[in-house]
Image (tube, rainbow over all chains, first blue to last red; front, side):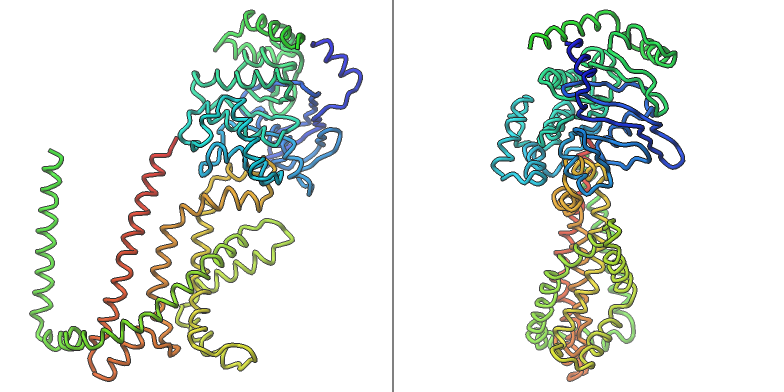
Length: 278
Length: 267
């Protein structure tokens, strides 16, 4: 599978999402310093790096939630920008899930998911709710449709947020440390959801601190430090033999807390066979 | 144990209240001019004769504050939204809204009533109504729309920006995000302060008496002038209290409920 994908990239299949020379400043501080990154269709890319390395900012800029200071963003070969009149339409083609869920507390789970199809895509109420119900069912949340978000566990809330982001049928799903605010017990169910999304072929850009998960699910790992993309490569390469000393140092520090060992790389191989068979 | 201390608390509260009330009653009652004051302000005979007329005139106040509130609620919201506009092209709207609020909150109500109620009809423009009731209504709507818009604005700003960001991320426009996500949540929070302003509006309907609208206060003044007795004014005060006290209690209860909901919903 990986070989197929690599050859596809050399054939210059246009990426779904491409970021070129992205720069972003907060006050005087350069938080993104010339990021180049593109995602092919069905590709899963994980962004790793310390807090403050620019992962979240990168995702928010890619989702056109914030203006950039330099560079360009292309979605399906078309240039898009925060300032464009079409930015709202572009955001419908991108889905984003936040660390803090940000569900709408005054709406039921079903209404949370159906809101964008109804309002932003102008679907009828019936059609929007049908789509929402299907999504909730596929994420194992069908019986929670009539509940309000505050009645749900953190993991369930985050899965509703994923359903909500998928409701506009985005081309790319951006995920911003979506398990960081969860109990360790609840992390697993959310990661499982992402895993099955990856297997279904969803194109995803994932900022995460879960190294084992990244090793397992990603086609490519990107290491960010101080707003710069230091090194990228396959999980095998990045976790097995990183080249850049800064990547090595980061991984060494991460491993000193929890050791992602050979077992996880074995897991990666399992996943790839599953994908190849599909 | 807990109920015992609660009962003891209630007993202490009742006793201290009775003592204070008795002291106040004694102080006032023992003042040398009390009999005259009592006759001038609290004469039962004048109370019962003034009650029908004063109560009937109160229907004008009711009409005024209900009509006014129905206009104030939407207008105040529009002004609040105009003030939160960020689109550069619509800056004039935001500036107008800001000036409107500054002006009508900053000038004493009674002056605005004078200027609009006497000044505008005096221009003798064609098609401009001259009825005092109309101008009384306009004045109250303008003043209270300014106050109410600030209540709405505080409510809108109390909704965390992440909510609007989440809505925008789904592809909703700013207006849609306000309409479906921010404003509905803000509404729940502003109900107690809105009711507070509504109470203020009810009382301020008495101000329009200066335009010659014969509402309850004006009616009481007429009766007072005819009888040289202030009791009719006390009758009016009582009628206002009958309306406003239950409302004040309602505000308190809603506010307490809101606080509990927020404390309980920290998850």
